[in-house]
Image (tube, rainbow, N blue to C red; front, side, top):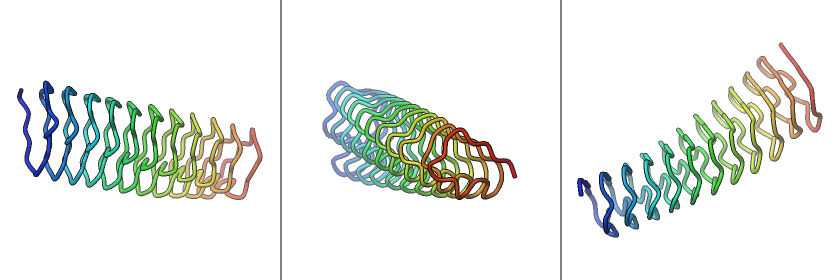
Length: 193
């Protein structure tokens, strides 16, 4: 009850779900019992069945989500491949596009964290920040292309455009535009300026 559906095949799988809003072709199509979801856009939250408290705005945003909960996806392809991922916030085209089960990540900007699959507790703000991270966790990247090369590194902090841009190691800190931008495999480095 209390569901709103606008668009062909939107919310068509609904059985006992309530308080959902689906706008767009096949938005929330597979939703059966999940509650408190908002999906706006072509195939937004298409595969969701029981995942609740999600918000998705944009074409194919949260498209593959089945049981993940408390996610926010704003932008085309935002959190597109998330299946059981929960408590993620992705804002921007292709933001966290490939996350499948990663949790508690936040990304704002075009292609931020877009290669991430299972990592958690990452923060990426700025065009292509942490864009190569796949299974990385506990990283913070603020600035265009900050930590853009790290794939599996953990506990890195980069603040500034291009900061730690080539880094693939762990436990590095760089503050400032292009700070430590050529540091690649090192660990436990600190750079300011």
